[in-house]
Length: 210
Image 1 (cartoon, rainbow, N blue to C red):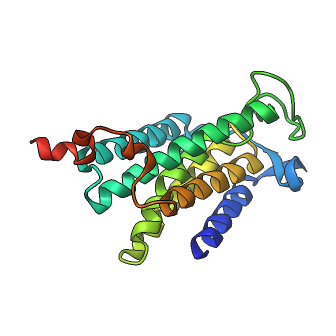
Image 2: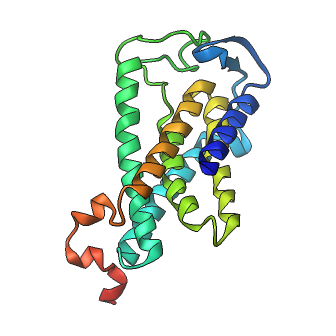
Image 3: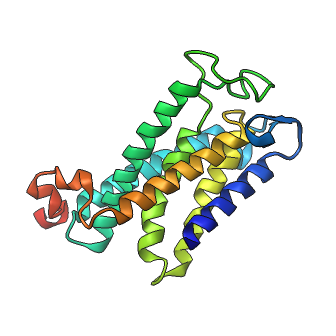
């Protein structure tokens, strides 16, 4: 429960920070504002792509190397479970709501605009949140500093709004979706779902082959 409160508070902070300077509030629960575009420095799109690419590659590499016989390995496989589940859910919601992105309109109330519009929710924030949540859940008592990982989806949420990829409620929903998937996949079973479908050589980890 503490983690859920922390996640919601962080996501709300992301929305509020990303909203300044802003105007024309509206959208979901009045959270959304059109902001001045900023694709420079730390907020540059290339840095967002580097973050998501590194995290996806990192969770896969560690999971394959460690397998399911170590604490770290099981945790990474749970992150993969959460990534897949939340990613599929996010894509389904995008298809259902077909919301126009800030790069396509200055009006945050443009929902159900048809194919090609995929603003709600933020898929990248969903995935980043899904990756870190099992890690935070597993190691928070032994290593409280692991909560610093929450800064990654916070950064990505702000960055996605700044480059007009998403509205504030998009990143808020993505954070909630990814966190929920991470909690679900962490607590449902000891053996991660995808790992249970893998051959024995993957289950024991590639490191045992060297």
